[in-house]
Amino acid sequence: MNSDRFGLKRFVFSRFAGSLCDQFLLFAVPLAILKATGSLTFSSLAFVIEWLPRILFFPLSGFLADRIRPRFIFFNVEAGRCVLMVVAFLTLTFHPGATFPVLAVMMALLSVAYVLNFVATEALLPRHIPAETLPKAHSMLQGVDQTTQVLGPALAVAISVYGGVGAILACAAVLFAVSAINYLFLKTHDLEVTEKMSLRSIVQSNITAIQVLRQNKILLHLCALTWVVNLVYGAALVVSAAVILKEFHLPESYFGVLQTSAALVTIITFFFVPRIARRFGLSTLGTLSFCGMILSGALMSLSLDYAMYLAGYALLMAFDGAFSVYLRTLRSQIIPQKHLGKTMGLIGLMNMCSVPVSGLAVTVLAGSFMPLQIIGIILIFALILGLMLIVIGRRAFGYHSWLPPVIAQPQA
Image 1 (cartoon, one colour):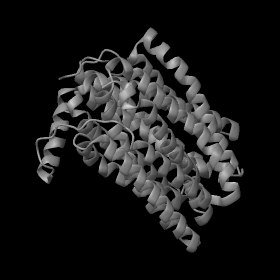
Image 2: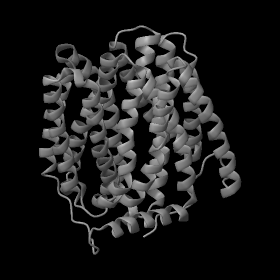
Image 3: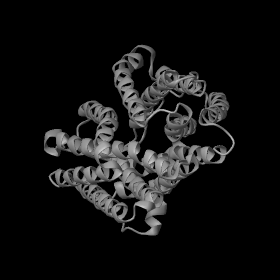
């Protein structure tokens, strides 16, 4: 299908609106819970509550993405998120003391919507636009994600000054509604499905995904390495608000500066990522990104002031983005198109397991250690596990580079 007929720009616009709302909430919710409860334990517990449904829904979302018309998925996801924002806003308006349970449940439901949106997008683009247009499409979406990471926290700070978390929820509801209406005009084709939806078909779908992974050992090894990367990434997300408010005793506006700075550094990094991949190879890009994340985490854990922590956090997010480019490039060349949804659902399930684990680790460690010490403990564990995986992967699968290169082509 031609990208103009499909409506790539329309799709990107809705992605921008939805991603901007996500950034609003990622900024506002941890701070709102921390301010309402005064406890890092509750803040990290909310993080675990948010990510567990996200993990559990991945296999089902992959199954749905291979069966249901994409426009139907995207519209209902955005409409559902709009309704959820309205319900949360009204509940907090009449019951302001219920901040933790309301926001925790809200983020858990939003995480399910995020998963379905993510997997459906990964399966949508290769099926609706020509192969030569795919790099442009992925670049546009990556640009949207990074731009909203800059705009989101900045706008959220401005909005929260006048109306707190309630104003952010109201603005998010409006943007989700606009995004949903825009999706109605997206032109997508129906998927060819011969089998009725049933528990048996869901199980068979995931069995097929497992077979795809077993046939491509690169994907299995990448999943294990991504698990380690997400362990560090998740710890940074959970702890950062407490580091700024409790260790450095700074106002919450500095948290917005932290997120905005990280997004800006990531955007700059993406100008160099293609050049590094072309000149030194994709495996080198992955290796540099992986090592960069570990070193950035070390800088964060050893920070003596806000400036050091900001530098470490920004570099961590930038290297995480570069590692994502490495992953997406490999996956797009390996996974068969007809199995994109189900395979991405299973990969997402495995990859994301480490994020709530890091949140749970913070919850357990918060009673005995300071936030910066928690980052250091998780980082050491991730470093040891990562080195073990690299050594085991090279010996077991015969990779000559530090990280797996492309050794397979897409199957029909």
